[in-house]
Every structure is written in structure tokens, then in C-alpha cells.
Length: 261
Ligand SMILES: NS(=O)(=O)c1ccc(S(=O)(=O)c2ccccc2)s1
Ligand SMILES: [Zn+2]
Image (cartoon, rainbow, N blue to C red; front, side, top):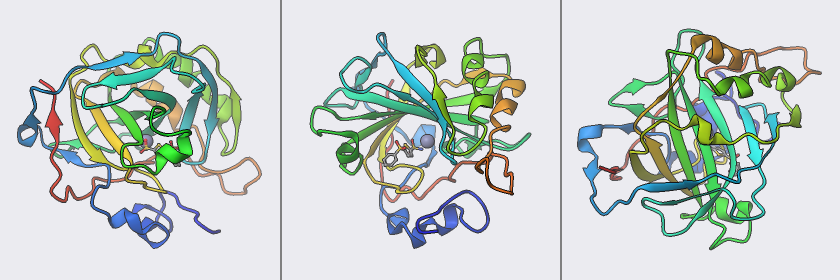
């Protein structure tokens, strides 16, 4: 119906351009990051994450991913510094992942993909009066991308994976208070940055991407719990496992990727 889109053969990334022509635009995401072609920009400051008074509100299954939303009514959880001229408020975070034994990150590094990718979505509340307005502005959003690789158990990810059974079906939502995503950060905040877009419809070209170079480690068991989620709703006959919810890399079209040192 209407602008229905997904990750299947009939509604996947290669077909999104039919309802969202910007899919073939000049600053689409994700991209393949080639480290030695990234410009080392010594003017790039460190990024600053002020997540101390972070307030998660709920966790939900929107039929495309699992999303944790935050109270963005004030500047309590912001990202600033790095390539940014303003502070950007944390709105939500979500994940992209593969199938069993398959990798599912969106950005790739020299053609190599990670098992999964975490996106922390922020908006420019200095210049725009609400998220929706920021979401269509060229400097409206910042998404902090963190790669997940399989290895040891992540000591805090279980707080999220233990809640996934409550949001198994598309359209489900439940309270999820007091979670601070600071616990999901790797030890180094070294990053690549470039101008891009949302990686799902509506694919707005409004995102300054900041991708951390250092992945975090999660266990195969923890990652497997994401795959118990469903793309489909409780009332639907078909039960389709939520996996491989990633868009492949898009053409760079002359863009420069910068690297913090
Ligand atoms: N994968 S991603 O981080 O690029 C991303 C896709 C969609 C969103 S959004 O739900 O914030 C959103 C933002 C604007 C309009 C509609 C949804 S964030
Ligand atoms: Zn995402």
C-alpha cells in the first residue's frame, strides 16, 4: 500500500527509487569508506557526547528495526564538536543487522562489512524548531554510526536484548526508561565524517554522518536475539524474521570523506 517499502525482493533497496526518487541523489548513504582515501583534517576537533542526563523513554519495533526513543524536549543529551557548528539533540537509536552468519552493517570499510551497525540519530534544535523540520534540512541531522563485530559478550547490550521479546511484532512499543547509550560506545571516538542521507525512506539528504572507527564487540548469541524480531505485525498471517535490514553502499558522487586524527 502507498509508500510501503522493506528489504525484500519485492520492496527492497533497489526499488525504493520508484516512490523516493532522491534514492538516486548526489549525497546518499551508506557508502564504502576507504580509509587511506579519507582526508586527514587536522582542523577536525574531537566529538563531544553529553549523554549524562540521558532519558530513554521507550523501545519499539517499527517494522524496519528496533528503536529506542529519547526525551528531546531540552539539550540534556547532545553531540557537538567535531565537524559540527551546533549541538544536536539525541532523538533515537536503532540497529541494522544481517542474517545468521551474514554481516549486516550499512557502511563498509574498504569493502568489508561488520556484523551490525548502531545508529544514534540527533537533530539540530538550534536552527530548527522540531525534528521533522530538521529532518529535511541539509544540516538538520547527525547520525553517529558504531560498528558491531561478533566476539565477546557486550556487558550492557543485554539490557536491550532482554527487552526485545516485548517488541517482537511490528507496531509494538513498551516503556524503556533509564537507558544511557554511553555504555554502547567504544573506547576511542576517532571517526570518519561525510555528508549523506537517511539510509531508509524517505532517504532525506539531511545527515552529517560521523562513523566511529573502533567497533564494539557483541556475542553471536546477543546478535541472534535481534533476529527473533519480526518485520510483520501480530495480526498478519506471514511471520517474516527481521534480518538483513541494511541498505548497500551508494555511489560517492565526488564526496570527500574526512578523518579525525
Ligand atoms: N538509518 S538512518 O539512521 O539513516 C535513519 C533512517 C530513518 C530515521 S528516522 O526514523 O529518524 C526518520 C528521520 C526523518 C524522517 C523519517 C524518519 S534515522
Ligand atoms: Zn539506521
